[in-house]
Image (cartoon, rainbow, N blue to C red):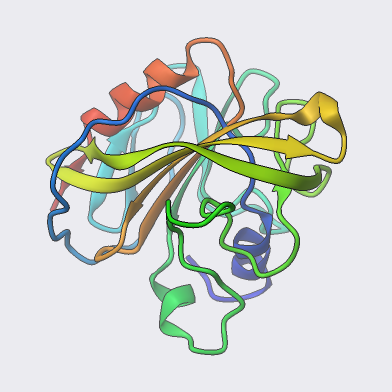
Length: 201
């Protein structure tokens, strides 16, 4: 991922998402990574992590304004989940970033500004301010053969119609962040399947 206005937009634009349960386990070291893109049914590489995009979905590696960098989407929804390589952002000591963590209320949000609520009706750049983020679940969950730090939050928003849940998987050694936005029917299962099939080189 480029460290530019596009990356800044990604760092600042991470927000709200959906639910399921975590799988307990032990944290395991994971390799360092990079990123490429693909369309529905094909493979996407984010560093050393490779996943298969669900049929009917698309992956945007880089968007012109940077707001949709790393987005997975299907149908009319602009961004249901993000797969992000944060190596460059975390390597720069001056970068405006908070490391992902299930140990803080807005741990899914890497920006240093006010978090926002991304939903099907409010894509990145149009979302309301998030006013609360209650951790519902945390632990470790599988991403292929690896274990990621996992969290699920109930997020409340300035616009209550955008209240929702967010799921996060964070691989701290590889600096891969996966964030699932919104509670769309069937998307939890799709994300779990996508991540279960992840491979690492």
